[in-house]
Length: 181
Image (cartoon, rainbow, N blue to C red):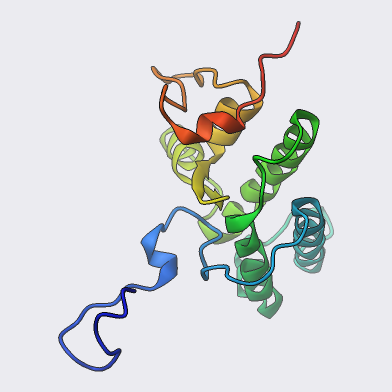
């Protein structure tokens, strides 16, 4: 919003924040509140989602993600994950980034199951990992970006031709160094 026009019922078009980056699951709102330590936020969000899963799990351990997404607590979870938009991850040590992004990856996958569904076919899985993600410290990071760009030292993902982060991509600074074998 540029504040160029008064908001009202007129000929101007408006877009909700969640539609600006529809594949970023944590854009339910623009985060402009204080930002906690990213690990504190991660722990709280994982705990909240775990409670949701437990509430919607059957006797065989299967989660009803459709019912989970309709739970009123899910909306609070969606707001809480918006804090990652401003989480200062570039200031983390390598070990901290590794731990943070492994846990964030797992949270994003579960969040995506509730938000967009579990991919059933190979083509859907390919699209799922390439296009679904979170906005972190102002950058959109898909699941593929987190796994292959950050955790695997910007390695080319299976069935892809290019590395996740190009030479001048500012997200490349998040990549962990190549691990020793």
